[in-house]
Length: 130
Image (cartoon, rainbow, N blue to C red; front, top):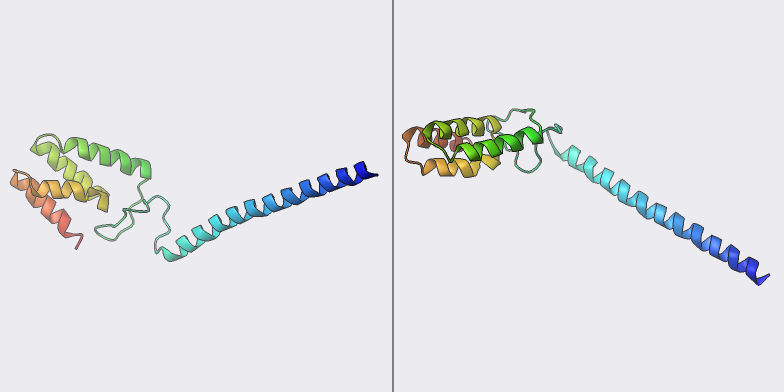
């Protein structure tokens, strides 16, 4: 008789643990959903292709670039900026295309450059952040 109650008690505790774990798992899932719904409501543009953190657009228009494309363009931009004046101008054209805050470091470097074309284009692009 004692063994029967012990087995029933063990099964009851097991079921109770499963239910509690399931509830905590559901809470984790639901808080994630509620958080993302809150985030979507606060955003004016619900475009999932724009990066979350550094997406201040120059012209305030929604550009639909994937995060992969933006990251590859940033890498290309930083690599080109190490070259000659023509490469730096190409890099600044990429910065104009991306038009977000991640390009500010390149634009600041362009302001200190020796070439007047690079300085002029950098100043023009950085002015749009004001």
